[in-house]
Amino acid sequence: MRFFFFLPFALTAATALAQTWAWDDGTTPYVVSPEMVVDRMLRLAEPKAGERLIDLGSGDGRIVIEAARRYGAQGLGVEIEPRLVDLAHQNAKRAGVESLARFEVRDLFETDLRGAGVVTMYLLPEVNRKLMPRLLEQLKPGARVVSHDYDMGPWPYDEMIEVTLAEKMVGPLGRSRIFLWVVPADARGRWIAELPEHGGRWEFAIAQRYQLLDVDARTPSGALAVRGARLRGEQISLAVSGTVAGRAWNHLFRGRVAGDRIEGEVRISDGGDERTLTWQATRVR
Image 1 (cartoon, rainbow, N blue to C red):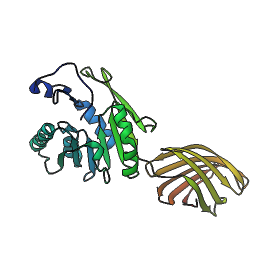
Image 2: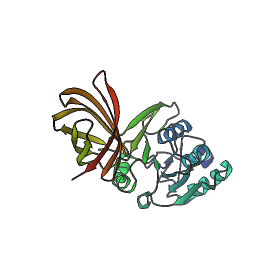
Image 3: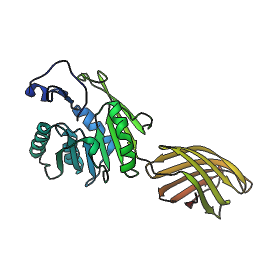
Image 4: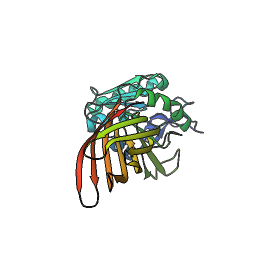
């Protein structure tokens, strides 16, 4: 995976490929992710068989190759240095995954990300932030983005793990951080749901910043307290408490956002009585 910065010394090619970092063309080096980091990145991403994975700055191809070998993912490695693309092709052939792992000489900022279920990268923070609008614009809700060491600035991560690595010689020394983002659906607006068995018409007003939600909920009985809200890809969950038809209830709404519809279920409880109802909401503005 390509990592843009300058090292004060050069290595022979044979020595470089044995390390956790390697020399490129004498001016722009690349750094490869250690095997433990590759493993953790793919565990967070959870690629599926047949799913498309794109590695931006793919270096020797190890992310794409491992995703193909272990998960059956169809991978594309994007790399600016032709020598590394040739090396990645050779590594894929040796691993027996050349039919699933493809590598191209290409500028990562000109790469079409549409259709990818997973995007992986090991780039500097300013590069991540420059890529962020393309990731949010081109990837579908539910797509996963995984970055080694550096976050995405204003876009808060969904998960982060830290791995201790004695051999880590660049970036944060001795450790690696691995970040996961799940591209969120658009849940903004005013939503109406009819629950004739429980309060009648429900209204939800949702404000959204990336995957973070600020939600107001109301029934004809009045406003209710939204104690928790989560959006992970297309999956939305709302924990709501308050009085409905003269009784105090707890509610857990769970559903899938698909365009201007949410479909799912709500579990309601008053501490004694508990039941689950179908929940469908429509965006009205």
